[in-house]
Length: 150
Image (cartoon, rainbow, N blue to C red; front, top):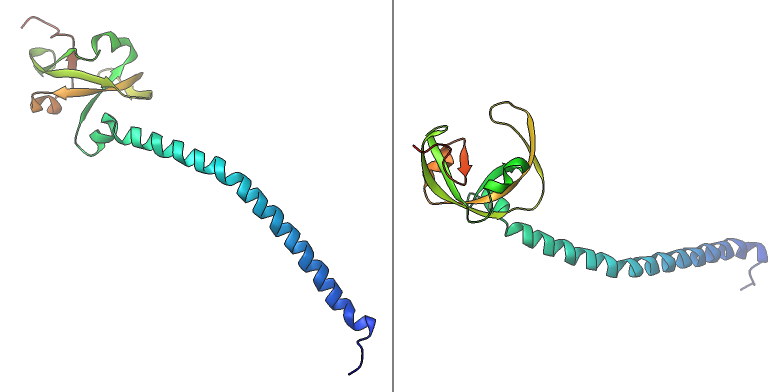
């Protein structure tokens, strides 16, 4: 066996340098990932808690058909406080009967079109605790008493 000439070792020296550089780069990437892990886990915990809260809301239950919600424009909020009686009318504003009570307001702001003018309205959803299922078939539900005394 003969000793390798220095020119024969040059590719091996270059490969060793490349391997060392790759190892340092990997170590830095690992440290960065480890530093990022706790904040990401904390964020995931907060998001999971928020999802849990949303899943238990009336809006989520309404999607699965287990709750009724009503869009309430901000201008009508005084008539839709929790516990306020809800009325629905057979002919839009005539022959009204009590059909339930206002439940809890739901988080978030929404936009809907006015049922008569079509203009955009801003407001929130509130849970409707309906005692008469017929109310779900009517387009208008009135809070705080019927509009007329008949």
